[in-house]
Length: 189
Image (cartoon, rainbow, N blue to C red; front, side, top):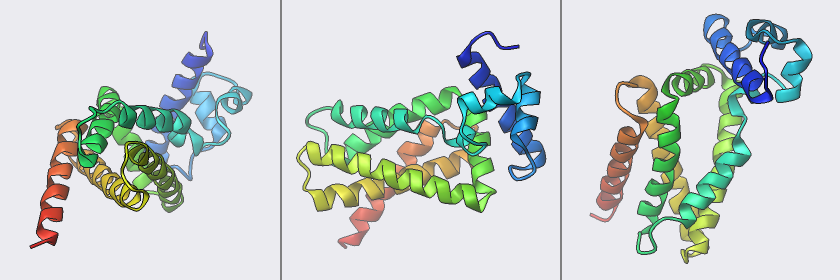
């Protein structure tokens, strides 16, 4: 039996990822997750509102971290550099837990309802990024456009990472931003 709330939450998350990978998201119940984690069923609901939140928990922290990372980017950085800086901070965390993060992304990619939830999360995070860029002096309409483009590059990087986890997410991220830069340069020619 886990001794702390953090330990129980971590065990529940690991158990859920294992079961989702083995029997699919739809084929897994919260009772099965709790049993695999070695906790009672009520403990699951002390940590997660439903089985979907095992995959999406921590969203408030993601918003705070991205906002802080945009604000703390070097003052002279251009908007794309600011976004890359913020995403690289997030990538360091994900690279540190690569197996679980890649598993989570694969589970989401295999389930349309989870993809929908992921899109909503992405839209909210894009707004956080746009707000941060605006606070750095970028006009609102450009901040929204740049944040959306940056988020698209981040999504491209995570998709590449799922396909090739032998390279770090940070490396895939730099490649995606280089591709974005090249594509933007080709728009004006």
